[in-house]
Amino acid sequence: GAGVSQSPSNKVTEKGKDVELRCDPISGHTALYWYRQSLGQGLEFLIYFQGNSAPDKSGLPSDRFSAERTGGSVSTLTIQRTQQEDSAVYLCASSGGQGAQDTEAFFGQGTRLTVV
Amino acid sequence: GQSLEQPSEVTAVEGAIVQINCTYQTSGFYGLSWYQQHDGGAPTFLSYNALDGLEETGRFSSFLSRSDSYGYLLLQELQMKDSASYFCAVTGSARQLTFGSGTQLTVLP
Image (cartoon, rainbow over all chains, first blue to last red; front, side):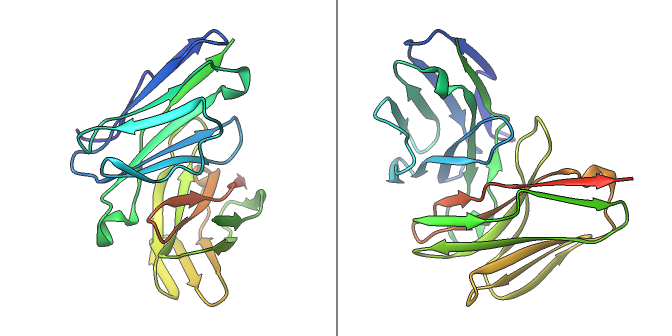
């Protein structure tokens, strides 16, 4: 596609429910990143994919968080048993991932997650 | 791992020049990037430095000193629309991209 697409754009869920957030990166981009941003805060790194593998999962806050990427394209971030502190905007970005092409990351508009 | 430090807030007047500094600690380093984020929007790429020196793109310039683990973003001829958050980011040895906590720039008339 023309840009990074994330869905849903907004999600309200009850505490304890599971949620899935989806990211469609720019076609051909090998690197994919997930970040979390609370209101007025910085970008908290969650996980990074190169192709389908995740060289760096160090940012996942707990074992309730998991992510996968299939076919070197679409990625899903799953949060199990959501808690109120999970409320934030979840941002996905992609980049070329090879040589000079990976110097610029393109971000989606994010999924605003609210846990009530 | 990576850690980055940048000021939390900067205020300047329209037409002025402002410099936003970024220092980093990283176990591996490929380059330093800068991103701009307006309220409610997604971050957008501004610049990337892999080598020491100054990169200029219009009113914005970015500088890197690898030996000092330091860089800055220089914004000239400030405009009201430049009011936004600015993030520095390090590309690490595994090509992961780690962001600083951001600098909120307010441009006053």
